[in-house]
Length: 217
Image 1 (cartoon, one colour):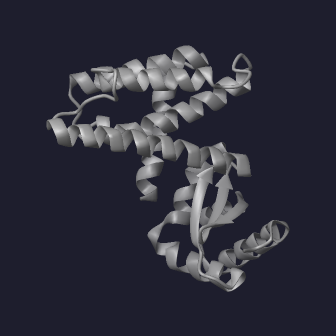
Image 2 (image 1 turned 90 degrees about the vertical axis):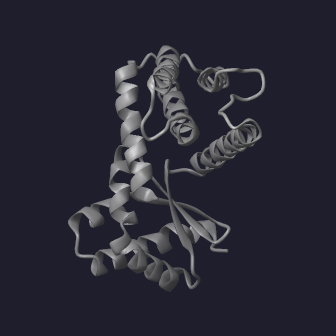
Image 3 (image 1 turned 135 degrees about the horizontal axis):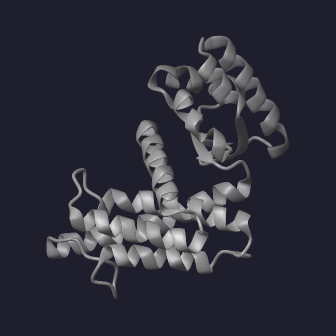
């Protein structure tokens, strides 16, 4: 495992080599905005500030994937998968893993109930999966430390949107009906009420996040 103290130097080496091998200003600007975080399970975790995440697709583009993998292996002397996340600290990575674990558990429970009943059901105790999701983002807000502070409201909204976009894989079909549209709006309104960020602005950020996830697949 690469020592944490040497990770920034090694990643800076990768960035310089990548800029030499990929002839694209957009790609250069994207890799220059990255921050190495850690190596875990043969995966190199690299973060980007929220404002820079729209550049991630330039790094993840299929045309550059082989070059990125080759450079990482050359510098680190081992094959590593690259994982880009939103955030630049180890705490951001831990929060990402925790969020993904919770969403995976929610998807698994939903899929099991769908298999058993041949129709979508909410988690235990709820007849409406969208209401269950609204309650989930409310609990997330109640667990936010110092949630009266504006910066923590913003962090909550970001976390809630990630929760929502993952849940939409199960609850929001390609051609949503009126029930799905109203359910989504209800959850956005709940996040808006907690964060004091207008629901239309949250909806815009949700679409941006969904587009980014789709480009990263």
